[in-house]
Image 1 (cartoon, rainbow, N blue to C red):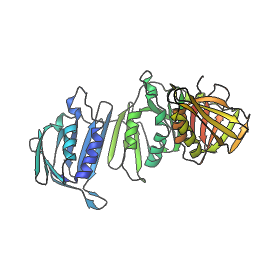
Image 2: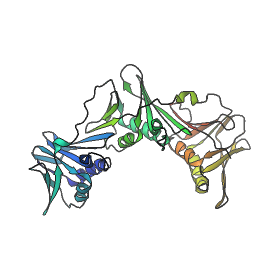
Image 3: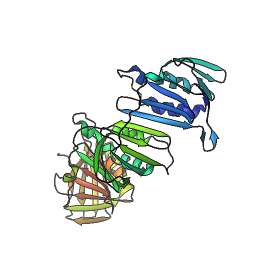
Image 4: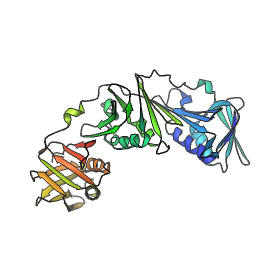
Length: 376
């Protein structure tokens, strides 16, 4: 194997794969990255017991030659030392391997030899039997992940809640995440095979989707097998196992009858909740109090014995229902929910004392947040 490549490009991709390589696996080779020089360019593979990513580097990117392959072949290198070495190389690099157990790295006048591992010993990527498949715009997929993933559970007590439920239908994808205290739900258009299919994808795998550096016009092909999902773009293929177990019926948790609904400017509300959270750190759940006064004003406040009191008033754009709000929420949860809303106005629907509140963009039912109030 022998090829030359632009160092900045190569280092960036090796860095991405290094983050998912396992350092504690029973298979030491999973601490490495598999490098293949092929007739179509360079292919890099890294992964762990739950996730594998294959990155393809073509000969030309934007009409610029970035790779030249001189000899075909493959080898595995330990990602940590390999990445640290690449970062310190001054120029474009030449990588070669003649015995498949060592790698020669040249950059200008610098020559380094790094121990390698046999590529034949690296786990083969799974051959899946595709049961369902669909296509979605990468911008839409990234958006739906960003707007739901923050609500997954951080506790392994209920493993199924550490992932995002992805419900595929013919013309739409509905993503739902919950940690039992809050819920985020977003719907986007998608092209999907006939029928309805629901799976739970680990949040760690979806985070990698957000890291993809693809054109904003790119399409992601999604393939679903019995216990695995594959996301494929032009130069990246991501294989992820699925989380087993039944996701809760979250649809039944969403209230439909509201006592009070208020509409406010999104950016102004975000700033107000953010300021209140500065004083809420003393509380276990970052208590932020919301109270409606004079029918058209929302008071946002936090009272901290150790820090002080912060209080501000914001004007409501529209109010429907009973003009009574007097509730406390986890300020951090509330802030994360409204930060996901891109629209100018946000609507908050209150269902009564100690009942969850629903947060949505004004006039947009495709995106919804559900947050339970705190007992004080």
